[in-house]
Image (cartoon, rainbow, N blue to C red; front, side, top):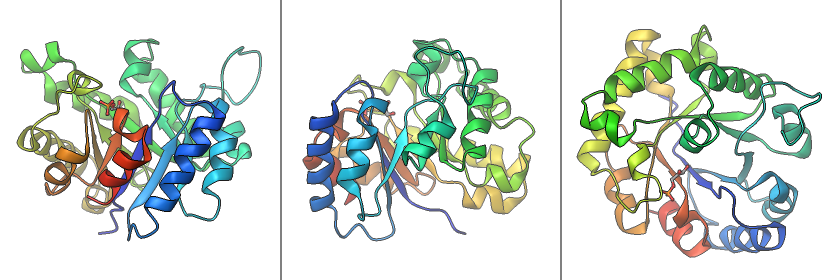
Length: 250
Ligand code: 13P
């Protein structure tokens, strides 16, 4: 099993180049000894270069929060996986709940974005998760299964195995309401079982499944000790080096 424990910091639409560089520099100093944990920062595209400069030589990855479905062309305001790669990014997020629910990314769009990122050679995180309404009407597993099926499409097992998954229940994002470790583990076990029935066993064993949604220093250790929770994707608590490094070291 070659699952890599991965902690991501998704800065969303926060931290311009100067602030982002400062937090990244503090983080590098705070997490010199992070063992085998892969750490990835997702600044806004405007701050990408500044953050790359700040983490140079530290082993910390820097990624893009979203990409367009095309490489280049007449798409005002968009960023692409290939351009992110050429700017030095090594990672990407696709399908974040804010992309799905605020910007209207469909499962089909998320799939196309995933292919763009993988083709560009980025370490790609596919985010999935149910809304509160879907959880309350017992649709969580159906929603996750559909997001996985459409997200991966016809990708072969060896490419699926390179993707990191982030289970982020929409109702826990930015709300301070974290899924309990039991609730999160249950969803993660479902995702792992889905992978196991869809692909050869080694895929399910290799894929890192992160939890995201109000993860903070106080709850990180309990969540990360669950057998199917292999990492975290952190929003608010990643904006300060002190709280983010405490999660990384949890
Ligand atoms: P919060 O940690 O702020 O809830 O955000 C989680 C998230 O959306 C990470 O991608």
